[in-house]
Image (cartoon, rainbow over the protein chains, first blue to last red):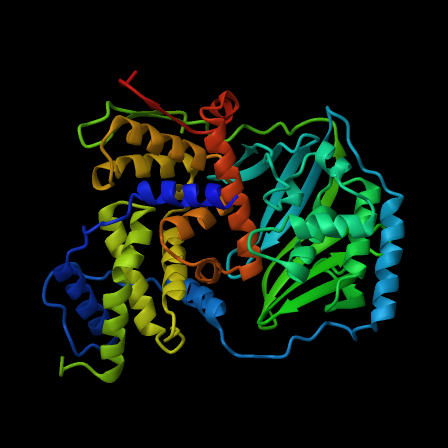
Length: 327
Length: 183
């Protein structure tokens, strides 16, 4: 895995189109800096060169607020919305969800799809509804905005998903092969981490992926809740409400300035919402609006399937785009 | 130099150290003239918001602003086909030469189109823009943990796509590059 990772890094480095760019000449940069200072203070004028355009108030706010939210350093205590329950009660609540999950096998056939509609929010960007159709083999179709219209984009299943720690992307057959014994599932998760995440954070991610995956069979989802119940450091709020004011059991894991929460339906154990907070402020959330099996794909146009045609390769490896279709 | 206030001296240092990185990030998404504008606007925001610009590590903050400026200028530029076209058009300024290198590069670009937008952004912020995963997480406004997940999935999908080569399924669904004469 390490060798493959190194090879990928080297490949990306070899073909980095911005490596060694020196298009922005030093004198131009100097003029920009002069103009930046002058634009604010009014006591210095740019000598020559490009004039920084007057900035529309809108994007200054958008850019500024977004960046400020990224780097906010105010340390505030992260408090759950309700009084946290004791470990035994939390564990009992998760085991009750496990029992619910174990009775719900939502496996789909080869000609069926799991449909999901979510509302993705990441302030200050506007909320966006997103629909997806997941096939049993893990292939997925996602809606995308195409100007004023909506089209469907296709994404292949991620082969080798378990090696990448991508439990969310596993096909039904791979999910069905995962152990439903809690200790064994914990061991699998620990041995197949997601990125550089390890230990408790990795378990929380993997369980979230498994619970989010509409393809995960009931017994596997039950085991995932078992893993969660055995995971230390979680805060459970049994009387929370999600972004649609639906009653929910909220499970939160905090690390430094960041916290991640799963909102679970107390009646079905389904994931209602996932949320990330930064310094106690909403960073992003995905609210599940609708989910269930369907037997067909949507009657929406496929997103533009453009073909970029490039000219003959030049002596220095340069290519020129000479035609494009379909976009 | 004596004309500068202490704030201006500090900001000039930030500009000197990071303007090429911000420009490079912008250039990866747009043409040279627009990239200059994006970089200039980014530093204008940085100067106006210098009260919140992190002194210890300003790059993620600057990239976050540049990212927003780019988005406000034209989201459609970020579509797969346009990205690939833009990168292909940048080849004269990239390294390369031998035919096998060109083929490798085109295979990489084609493989990159198989990633989701978020996965591709994660892979390239680290692989091309040189940000650490922690910095890139800040730049994209997501938690370090979530960014690690996104990055790992993107790298896994990219590795798989490269291994699969010129997959006929991908050709039927995603952007592809053909080399040859115009039709």
